[in-house]
Image 1 (spheres, one colour):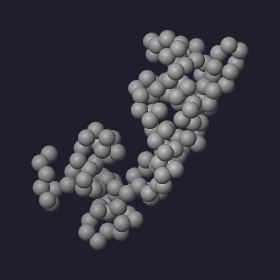
Image 2 (cartoon, rainbow, N blue to C red):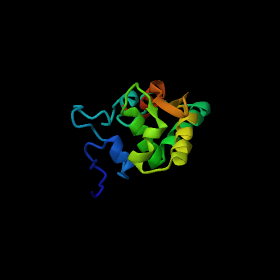
Image 3 (cartoon, rainbow, N blue to C red):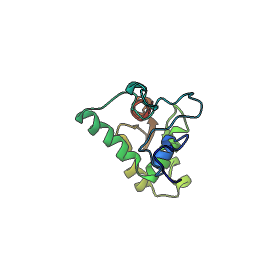
Length: 147
């Protein structure tokens, strides 16, 4: 879409922002009514603002560890298999066949997700069982919430 000083893309979502869309200008959300990005709008209502405000260095380091763990496609697939069980746990032995990866590869990636605090690991017999840490995802959701 050609950009002119008065034209703004309509309905830019967080997905669009990560897909390479130009987000240098705020745009209204379709059902939000009048744009909060119009001249004179309150900065607190800015449609591109983080809901929680700026974070400090310690918070940035903590979130970066979690986001880095999520940046791998195999880890995202593994995580989705565990999260699909809700509050239940998943045996590592049940993750190799659906993803077509070896048990050592599963162990490597699951270790990274556990270290990031996204999953917990519990030993049951000779197998590790994994479950989601709901508070970790609530924290990420709160950080990524563009208001």
